[in-house]
Image (cartoon, rainbow over all chains, first blue to last red; front, side):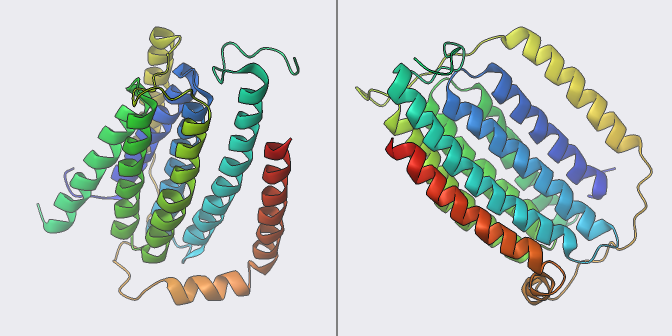
Amino acid sequence: MLNVGLNHFLVISAVLFSFGIFGIVTRKNAVMVLMGVELMLNSANINFVAFAKFGAFGNQGQLIALFVVVLAAAEAAIALAIVLNIYKTFNSINVDEIDSLKE
Amino acid sequence: MNLYNIIFYLFAAITLVSAFFVVTTRNVIYSAFNLLLTFFGVAGIYVLLGADFLAVVQIIVYVGGILILLLFGVMLTNKIVNVQIRTGATQILPATIAVGAFSGILISLLVNTEWKKVGTALPGASTTANLGMLMMNEYILIFELLGILLLVALIGAATIARK
C-alpha cells in the first residue's frame, strides 16, 4: 500500500482535479477561475504521463501531455485578453456580477 | 520505504497542500504564488514518472509563461492601493459537498479498477530524442496544427486586448 504505484498518481490527479473544480465553482475573481482551469489541466497531464509509464504506450502519453501544455498556454493568453476587456467594460471581474454580454 | 517513495510523498504533499491554498486563500497574490509551488510539485511528479523533458517544459512554460501572465491579469484588473488584493467566494458549502462527493466517487473508481499494467521499470534513457522522433513522424500533423493554433491565439489575444 505504501509502495508507490499507478494508483497513487491517479489519486493525486483526482484530488488536484477536484481542487480545480472547487476553485472554478467558488471563486468570484475571473483570474482565480483561470487558475482552477490550470489545476485541472495539470491533473489531466499527470494521468497521461502515469498511463504512459505504466501502460504499453511508449512515450506517446508524454507527447499528448506536451500538446496539452501548448493548449493551456494559448488558452491562458486568450482568456486573459477577454478578462481585460471585461474589466474595461464593467470595471469589475467578479463573475457573479457580470450577467450581460454588452453594456 | 525506499527513497523513491519518500520523494514521491514529498512532492505529492507539496502539490496537494499548495493546490488547497490556491483555491481557498482570499488573497489573489497568495494563491498565484501557491500555484507556483503546485506547478513545481507537478514537475517533480513528472520526473518521478520518467518524463524529464516534460518536467522541464512544465517549469519553463507554466512558471515562466502562464503564471507570469496570470500575475499580469491580477495586477491589471485591480485598483492597487496595497498588497492585499482580496477576492470573495460564493456557494462554499454546496460546492464542498458536491466536490467532496465527486472526488470520493472518482478516487474509489480509480482505486477499485483493475488496470492492465505492462511496464513498471524506470526508463533509464532520456525521453527527449524519442519525443522528438514521435513529434516529427507520427504526430507531425498535430505539431503543425498546434503551430497554427499558437499563431491564431497570439493574433487573437492581441486584437481582443487592444480594443
